[in-house]
Image (tube, rainbow, N blue to C red; front, side, top):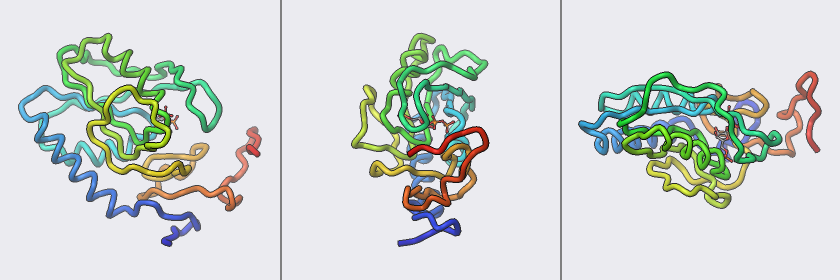
Length: 192
Ligand code: PRP
């Protein structure tokens, strides 16, 4: 089993991610050739995947971002979302590609897609690097999926635990048996 320099189990090394992102980008570029495309990244977790993915898409596109906050605790999505940062330009008539780092329960996307559909895009598709298949409650197809993963708590390549580890170039698993990886945050209680 490969470990990173922090002692975490490496689930997806950087080269494997890059190879898969290149495949997804090529497929997306071919599918949207000649169509008005807007790629919308869901902050914050998407930012690394988004940057790599759009550079692999050989088609003109707009890039924008949306940030939603989900009410719930640290680890469980409630599905009740509020738009914390909206995008500026209209998506009416545009083909929208929603770019997600990870789909866990799918509840965030269920709500967000309803919100976006009301803005009359020509279509909405989903690109997700990681999908936790076992937990899916998503009511929409995942058109471009990087990897199906088990129900592990993953960090890196944009994904965090309490704000940390987003800058890892790979995806790693946080194990509760490694308490040093769960450092206390001032003003916050550790769970469990
Ligand atoms: C993650 C991820 C998705 C959401 C998926 O975001 O980026 O937006 O959770 O969860 P769901 O499928 O169970 O609804 P997070 O809330 O960790 O915020 P972040 O992107 O700012 O890290």
